[in-house]
Figure 1: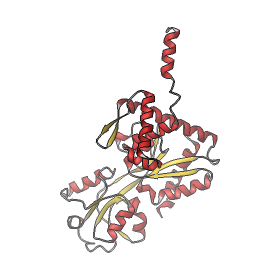
Figure 2: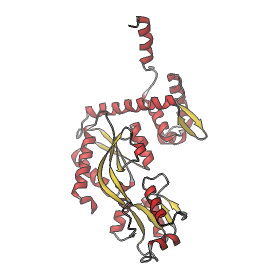
Figure 3: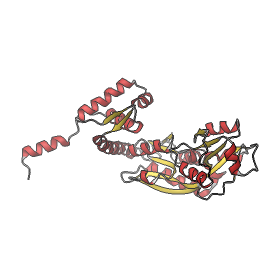
Length: 318
């Protein structure tokens, strides 16, 4: 058994420094997610030097370096990775504590990340149903690319992500609930001059819009082009943003590979036309991604249940 002096030393190392504040923890987690001071300072409405001082204070209080500076990026050190795991869990527990005081329907805030494939039709319908069921809970919605939302989910910045299933190497510590299969569509403006011609000819002759290189659907699109010996095609644009892609299609004869869920309304209104690709692998699972373990706010379970019910009803398809 350790003597009293040994116990005192061990216990001292277990106690968090009293000068560490929640602002230190939030700043650290935001910087770890963004990898840069500039973006975080802009988002928090403070100057970059002020944010840098907050990070320096935390590193001094912890007695360790949390980030390495590589060019313009901040990369977590080994100690930074370890601290991030525990800091994120602590923030999640704080949010759960607040939610416990204000359970679903009686106040609180639920943070949800929504990927483009679910943002146009499915999620707005779920959000309206959630508003009816829990009128005093604020639904805070974060959008952006998959990699951004996965980082937020891991760091406690959001409680749930709705969209395509993460890649296998992103699933550690997360769990996925399947909702439906969403196809990748090849679309153009409705009056495209090459409509009726073979898809391969149109792809070879027209400007091409591809999903971003880090988008989950990009690999399937690349495999489709490879199977048709079209890998030499140079995309004119890369985007998964509806407003950008729709605008480019409206002013050109470009073709766009995009999740059908993103452009469902435009297809139904006849503003865009879908081309037949005849490729079964141009599809993927869409669902709910959550963190494994830890407390689950009642409002999160409510939103998940309403999402499943909305998908099962089929009403969101239009």
